[in-house]
Length: 279
Image (cartoon, rainbow, N blue to C red; front, side, top):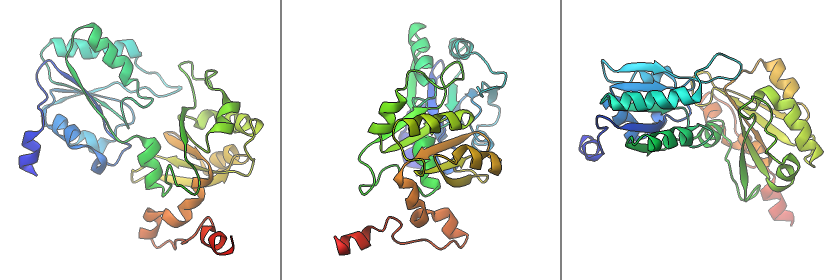
């Protein structure tokens, strides 16, 4: 393993690595992310990077918080991007560490363009997005051929904090059998209303996964019509992923974390085998 690690590229002085930290569990870091943590002079990290991951930083590394959380005072994105430029020009080895994947609702593209504008060399290190890894830790596959041949990843709010008007919710309701929503908890009631108005059943299964892949992970299963009520009653708070679609039913069979705690799993949650026998 050490020999393989040595063959990976080094984070050089004056470079910025835009790196995904995954959804929380440090075991889901890539090897490149771990190497960057071991070499960086400065780590500029966001609000969704788990402390256990920051604990892997090399001794003496400077940790700079640059988190952005809805409804709370946050650094402005242009300031964060220009800070990366400044640090690189000082000859620092800069790790920009972002929860999930930097290019999936992570503003990594904006930061990369700023680095290009200022002639700063950089590397993109993808990470596991919460929209995939978080669902997997809840026992929900993003795709399953008995449920869906397509999936849509959607942000629950735009730059103003409101439901994005750029999303055609009626078309989304009709065209995407499975919808995975990021940053949607604040507007979950209105989003559910728009999806139902677009043709989704009020009884369609929904799962909400909070603090995915961490020791504090919580999952509730509900329906479109009850999602906002059940989230409020359960006291679920961000960060959380919301998934809408029949794949949620598969959690009855695939909740592997629940099985570790003694939960009994259901072998055929969709009743597919019975349909195959009678079809």
